[in-house]
Image (cartoon, rainbow, N blue to C red; front, side, top):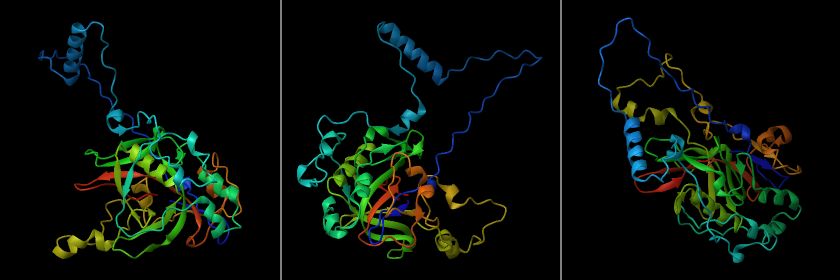
Length: 359
């Protein structure tokens, strides 16, 4: 998760691609060959394999229906992923009542989306979604073109705006055998989603201690009509009509993974007294950045950049923000115009389906 700031008190936060490592290339498949022996082996009964059964079944089906083609090859990655096959003929999220006068002409040309729902973790009432034109009252000296460029960005490479881009650009990959957790990718790289928010809280430097789960996070409210498109996009790419999310009082949280503490790791061991609390030097332990290429750990630094007076080329600069922008020091002020870069995952439990931590 990363940020960029546009002038005080106007702050815009932008994600850095440097905080997200690409998925490592898959290891080459191992092969084995049989060596010849000087002793003639005893003939063995031919084994029936799944391949031969499938071939026999296909041949029989073809002989029964001469005009029917054999099955095409099915790849494992296709069985372990989900991709939106078709967009609806009519957009289910477009609502002129939700559109800001400054942006209302944008939506007719955007991809059609199905309606979706995010279920908040609390029922605290919020102020509603922010209107783009209201920034004129909040920060009248903030440059409009900087905000427009961020809000109207669609996609470039594996960076995309879920409020503007087509869900067909992504696919959800199952990363556990049970399929209980899926990550969103563009081709083989993590999909880095880019969303503009009105910042309501920032814990990017010092994690929030409000709950027992320690995470770094930034919270904010998405613009009206952009929010409905974002929710529809997220539900579509994971093939769900509704998802649970870290949402409260109309403010959504973008979070790192929770902190790994000695107390958490050794809670059961300390109670039983069976296991040593000292990590063995004989085992090499990976750093937090190596444990997951898809999201940041709480122990990682969250990159935040100063975009107060800088014009960003969203088609080229997102992967190299560290080269074109100065770092922003400290937390993001409340009420800032912030652009957050994050990844999206879906996990399943016995009771809920949700979109967890982002980075």
